Length: 158
Figure 1 (cartoon, helix red, strand yellow):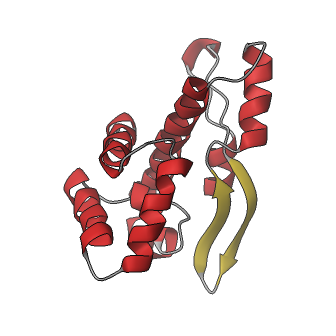
Figure 2 (spheres, rainbow, N blue to C red):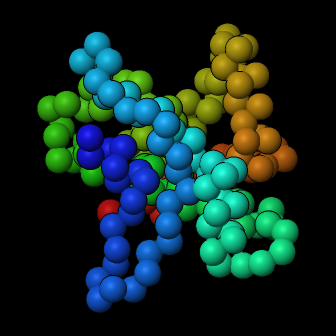
């Protein structure tokens, strides 16, 4: 499955320059009820630690973890968007069950609308989950999450 393989192994850049290694852990991928299903974790702790050990020494820094998370979010969005571009007729099959579906909106305006709906709509459980993402995304406030996600969208433009 292209998406699962691409999430784990970014393509090398031209002329053999080393591309940053993905720290996305793909635990499983399958076709579930005719929909693409890739179970994955961005900036997986074990993968981040392995990457850190290959590049640095000492204790891993919060900045390094945030950088891995941003690079993985960009890579995740770029991978899925490439697949949607290649197979537009299968858009719904590709994105319906994506673990990080909020990284796959067409525009920043769509993302912002979704975030606002999660926070201010009647979906309290969704708002609570979004607020919990502050820790997962290493951000203190929801506005910081929005700014972080905007960076992922801008970095994944192609």
